[in-house]
Image (tube, helix red, strand yellow):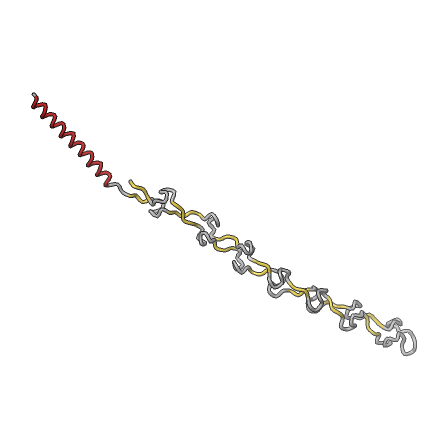
Length: 201
C-alpha cells in the first residue's frame, strides 16, 4: 500500500512539473512572436500633414509692407502724385507775354494818345490810349504752359497716382507663408500612434 502511494505521488509530481513547463514554454512562445504593427494613418513615420494655422491652408499671407494692397507710397513725390510747378510756383498761371501782365496794351489807332490825327477822341480806346489785351482777356496772366494750370507737375514715376508697385510682393499683395513655405500644410505628431509610428501587437 505504501509503495503504491509513493508511486502515485511521483506520477502526480511529474504531471504537475510537465504542465508548468508547458505553460512557461507557451508563454515564451507568445512573447517571442509579438510584432510591431505600422500605423495606417502616418505609414510609420509618426507624422501627419495638417493645415497651416498661419495661412489657413492658402500658402500665402498678406504682404507686411503694403498690407495686401500691392502698392506703396511713391518715394519720388511722397505720395502727392506730383510736385509744385517750378515755372509758376504752384499758382497755375504765368504772366501774359503780350501785355507783360498789365492786362491792356497801347491803342494802335491813336498810339496811346487817346485822340486821333484830327484831334478827336479815339473811337477805339475812347480816349484812354489803351485797349484790353485780347491774349489774356485783360487779366494780365494766362494758364501756365508747363503745368496746364494745375499748379503742379505730374510725377513721372507714379503717373500722378502717388502709388507704385510694392517691391516686396511685386504688386500681388501676397507673399509665401514662412511657416509652411507656401505649401499650406505643416507636419505634426500623428494623433493615432502618438508619434510612435505604430504599436506592438
